[in-house]
Image 1 (cartoon, rainbow, N blue to C red):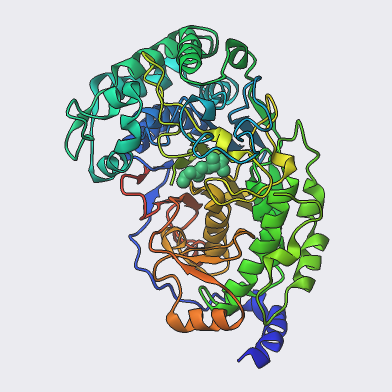
Image 2: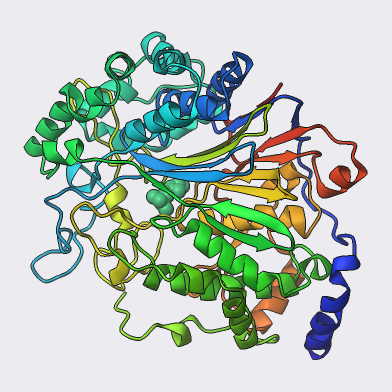
Length: 579
Ligand code: DON
């Protein structure tokens, strides 16, 4: 079989574009949700309802995204937040696009070696647990900027549902309860967090029980009434600074006063005629998705088939090369000169393809750049409105329930985003990422992210809205959903549900979801030199929308619903809602 692989790939290159996808899909997925006027897909069903209600009331997709952002902070507190940060990619109905960076910034008192002991070794947990792990939160400033610049409805209207769920509580379903149960030990360590998220007997809230968050309701009500100043200049910032000061943190009032959202130009590229719009630095997401897609464009993936050894081989090699660039070259654009145009160049992708051996696995150590010393929760939601405005938001506390701390009286869980920085070149972070100097800690710097809120367009019209949580795997999750739709002909739900693979340069392993590859495919890949890590758990919770039909085939026939939404079957509490 290896004998003819090179000729097969070469020959098929010339005919691939004429071929309809040849693959069938192994997984049986539920049908995507349908809508003619709007679609909201989030990881928590109540938040999806909040978003749909805003659209029905005449709000646009940005309004819905703002209301959903606040609602998730209440009903999905492991990742939804006002104590963290994130990114919003907007593609407007006229085809223009923008990107809001409301990710956390390092405190002014942060230093490059703040997580190292006197011998220069990382102190276990220091960048993950407690106040020292907290970056200056950006969610409130980001959501409010989005609403003011691009929304139509009032802050009070958009925040009311979140305030209601915090004040009156909401009933936990199985998915909600599971997320609390998984983090109970961690939440128990902070009395203020335990008082909110654990029952008086110290147990987590279970299925059918009501979680009420009065302090969070009061914080949200203050923001609703007074705007961002209530968070950044008033009692909330004071409470966080005070609690942090007493418990080993370094956040100070000027950190909050100086916080500013950045509005940036999204990263764009093309893939087989589709236009991708995604996250620029300080996220690596858009750049690395585009770099991988540029490499893959030269291979006939549709012909090679979903889940085949040949497809996995070229995908893994493209990922390997792109993650070296991610981990060594990218960082906050205010501090680092990111080589974005080089990484997005189709000629650079061709050079990478030339280096990929068609028969053998590459070796990550061979790609080590010169001079390189180098679960968790996030949530993604996708929204589209009747006018065709598309919004993709990924925001996070980083780890599940962030740093696991709540400043007394605020009800606000704080992030542990500082762990996304390079603590020491060469030492892996929470997601196993081995990173370099470009992502070293500096005051006011934003840690490099993988979050990839993405909108794909075709012929000037929105085609797909997509993104996911998953730490360093966000990039490959998002990429695989796009490839599954465009190359493998899957419908949006199948594309999201299909088993995933992942490679991130180091460690030099191909991670494979349970039942992701057949045993004979695994043998073929092992024979090529791959080290497979057959995971016992799935990863990611993608949320996607496809426009014009549930799959390319249906779009081409012209017979589909206008909006087709899919929440990952891995997301127990999520829902895609259309109207
Ligand atoms: O920004 C990032 O890349 C990470 N902080 C995202 C964390 C994440 O996705 C956790 N969820 N599984």
